Amino acid sequence: MTTPVLELTGLSRTHHTGNRRRTVLADVSYGFDAGRMYAIVGPSGSGKTTLLSLASGLDSPTSGSVRFRGRDIAELGLGTYRNRHAATVFQSLNLLTYMTAVQNVTSAMEITGVKGVPRKRRAHELLDLLGIEPADRVRRTLQLSGGQQQRVAIARALACEVDVLFADEPTGSLDHETADGIVRIFRRLAHDEGKCVIVVTHSKEVAHACDEVLHLKRGKLVPHG
Ligand SMILES: Nc1ncnc2c1ncn2[C@@H]1O[C@H](COP(=O)(O)OP(=O)(O)OP(=O)(O)O)[C@@H](O)[C@H]1O
View 1: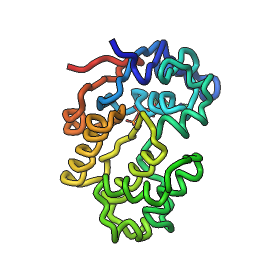
View 2: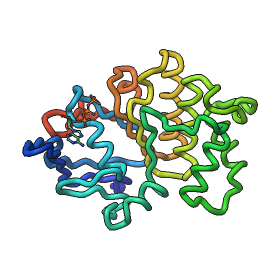
View 3: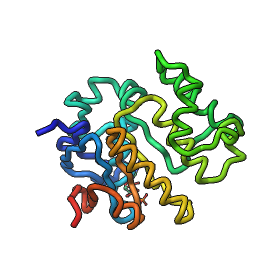
């Protein structure tokens, strides 16, 4: 049996607002493998983004742990985990729109301290992998379409040679065909490049394309179907 690349162990998260407490996740345990694509589904407010924030090292659990290759990410350092091992494609993309696609990718590599690879060449390789034409790679991302921007955001997330890729509603604002293209890219990253891809989605089509669908319901993560 292989060790999961990412493991949630007894993960709980209680949010406090004033004197109100709300337990969003209650004792969630699950192992995610490399080379597979997962969907996390569930009704609005069920805690999908909370789970993604914990698993991607943006937030800390009330109890329990997130383990990357067997090591607690709190011990590894959340910054190190986020810079070297896990990346998130946010719904709002957060691209630097005054920079070109190539510059968005190389600046992420600079910030996270990726060494030993010529940054520009790596940026072109990744943008090529994601189907961004050479001419579009050197245009400011503000001038690119929504689907192209989404793909640049994925390239940027991959630039740091992460093992785990998270995406929050990656197809939310895209037309059917573009969304389909993004899903194919995620599948290829999981199946051909050995990444663990975890997608939070409301889309039945996206969930259907995943290897495993996990339902978040009443604070628990349950395999679906
Ligand atoms: N920082 C916070 N402080 C207090 N409550 C929070 C915080 N973040 C989320 N919540 C609450 O936790 C619950 C789960 O929120 P979360 O955003 O994780 O749900 P979701 O499943 O991603 O929802 P959606 O599908 O609408 O994006 C909600 O009731 C929300 O109001």
